[in-house]
Image 1 (cartoon, helix red, strand yellow):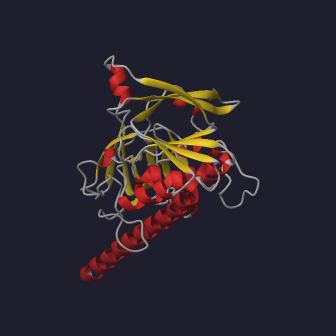
Image 2 (cartoon, helix red, strand yellow):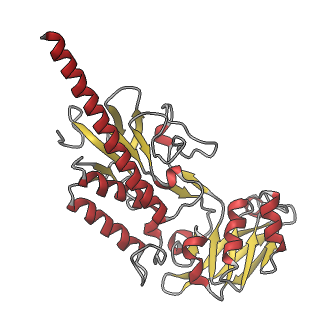
Image 3 (cartoon, helix red, strand yellow):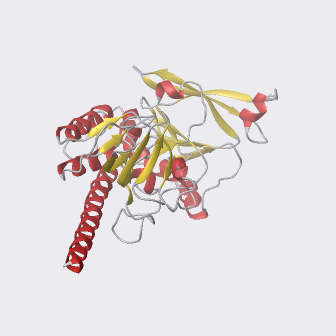
Length: 347
């Protein structure tokens, strides 16, 4: 049934788009069901977890495990059961006919009966100097994931919305001090979240201020930062046009970005798959991974604006594979019933 990745005459039972923990979990379950899934790894194989040096809250690893190691183990496990992996990236999809068609950046076209979308969400970055080098080495986009590594540290949280307030409040469990750095003089967060943050004695605010540079190394981690401020706000914009800004170096042991995540759903544009206001994939009500398009299922952070944890992503990955298997079985049964009815009519 299955053949080369770019063979448009081949129809896969299941294609999984995304190779983070959600996609890998789906691949394990689909492969064990003899669906021979193809996993498209995308432009960032392994997803956000590969940016995390240590994962201490994933069940079964009491001593913790490296993010990259966890992803590699998951891939080996899926391959052991027969999953196939490809470096393809989906550019666009055609979901109004079956089998579905996926056009890859290479120009190849895949056809599949069922599709599991596990493309995750990409953290918004702020463009500070050294952020790429130090991501996962004291710079994080997830306080729930990495906050415990900063016991006794002074830390910065970048942002002014609900995400930043949630990060800051969580970090007060571990850090000596938490400073919220916001480019304006008022928060965008809801009144409830803003009040909670303001009322917390561990949290300070730096208004009209932005992060310009992160100091440190992968060996030493984050050791400090350069902040810029301007009384009218948006200081980096002022800096770009040559206005005077105030610079300040601060010593910190960690920096957390709380400026939100962008779900990777661009390739679903112009399809009947429904997205929410923040472009997260919407699944049907109830405990299901089904979407508005029968045969398309969502798993992991691409469909989860709330939890965004490795273990919850893995759980929804297994759910998506089980839902896809049941859907394929139902369609096969319907086909057999139709054949039987036709045969009886001929008799």
